[in-house]
Image (cartoon, rainbow, N blue to C red; front, side, top):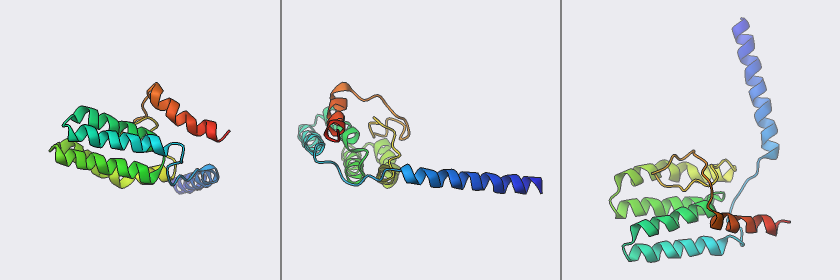
Length: 149
C-alpha cells in the first residue's frame, strides 16, 4: 500500500513538473531568414564538393548545415535526409543505419527545442551528445540573437 501511494505521488509530481515545462517550451518551425542564406550556402557547397568526389569536404558542409539548422525541424530533417543519401551514394552502411533514427526523431526534437546543441549529425557521433560549436559557425548563430535584440 505504501508503495502504491509513493508511486502515485511520484507520478503526480512528474506530471505537474512536465506541465509547468510546457509553458516555457519553445516550439520551432522553419529556419529564420537571417540563417537561411548560410544554411543554403552549406548545402550548395556540399553538392559542389560531392560532385568533385571530395567526400570529406562534402560531409563537413553537411555537418555545418546541421549545426546551423538543427533547431528547426524542416532544415534539420532535410540535412539528415541528405546525410542518408550521402551514406547510400558512398555505400557507407554505418551512415545509412545511423541516419534512419536521426531522420525519424531529429525533426521532432527540433520542434520541441530538445536538441544537443552543436552536434554535427553524422553517424560518427552520438545523436544525443552536445558538442562545441566552431567560432565561425557560432558567429552565424549569433546573428539570430542580434536580430532579436
